[in-house]
Length: 169
Image 1 (cartoon, one colour):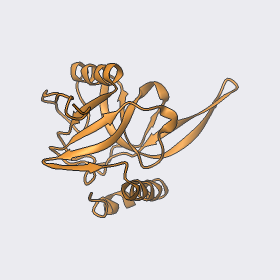
Image 2: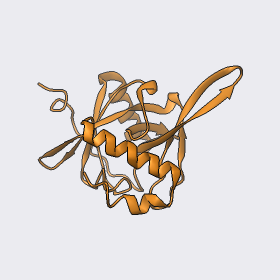
Image 3: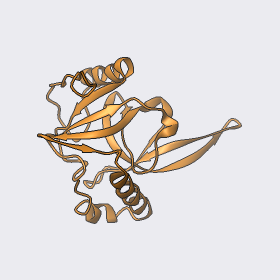
Image 4: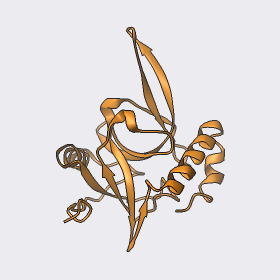
């Protein structure tokens, strides 16, 4: 049995954009920490066109250091879980230590960019399930397009709204 077919869907109604309530967030975060993967159901279009309402995103646990610009990640912030695109990495220097934060793009609906530290990172999206179609986000072509879109988004935030129509998987 493959990892993708062994994952059960979490079926809890939620309000709002891509965030989940605390009980469902705990369940999703716990599943990925224990099993190493989760099938995350999408109930809005905040990440359109890459991820659409009704899609399920297969998230695999990965290291924070492996995340790069263009990657779709799952993170836990303020008691909720969300999916977002990394648009860049920023350096942080504190108490003689150097590390970095992932900057996740805000939505086209005006959600601001978020800074994601390692403790909030849960995993990276590797596949989108859309009906009978499976979209591999790790293919060379998709990774290249994702990185280009992230670079343009980081450089020119107003371009995000225009770019979303070009990035349909």
